[in-house]
Image 1 (tube, helix red, strand yellow):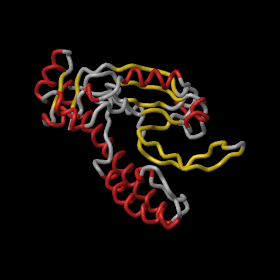
Image 2 (cartoon, rainbow, N blue to C red):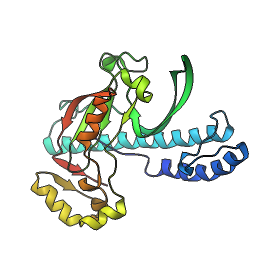
Image 3 (cartoon, rainbow, N blue to C red):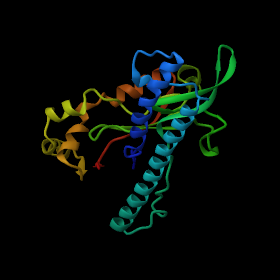
Image 4 (cartoon, rainbow, N blue to C red):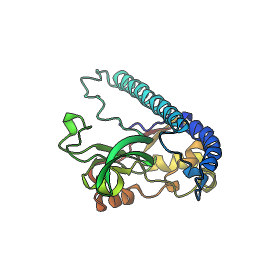
Length: 250
């Protein structure tokens, strides 16, 4: 079972609020960018430190949210199957965040430098034997979760050492959108999508018809192609491909 959940808007609100004040301060410091979404300040700046704190709050909210959802899922399995979660082996395999900035050390221009690595639409992919990996995964590389859409496969990958030089130890955390939520709603009604998924053997629980259309499989790139690119670039290796049989959206 894979749980893909974020900060319920906490991170998005932090970004929205801080872009406004970053705009003003960047002008004072003479920082010019092609897109205001790339807003940035020196990491030592007081405002940058406050933003890092706000972003960490969003990350903490998301992690706690996933723990609560996982506990609820275990309880549901116990109730339906009449067995304990521990007896069924329902322990958390791995929990990894995405859309966060982390202070990490990499070699740049021939010397080690401390960098603020901001992974937007990406997640960590440390290679084997990285000192921050837990012992059980140290030999294999960091587990990388790549959730698919409601009608496509999801993947478990493992980070490779090559990612350190090529992408600051980063890999994709999903397929990425092909169309906006507004456009996706115009392609197919939610109830039609539910029927289509059911015909493919995928049961869908909960959620409004509007949300279903926004998250339809056709709104995203082919996740298998995206994973293949990451593997071809030497960032990750594929461990498992998971085909959906049931989806809960909310």
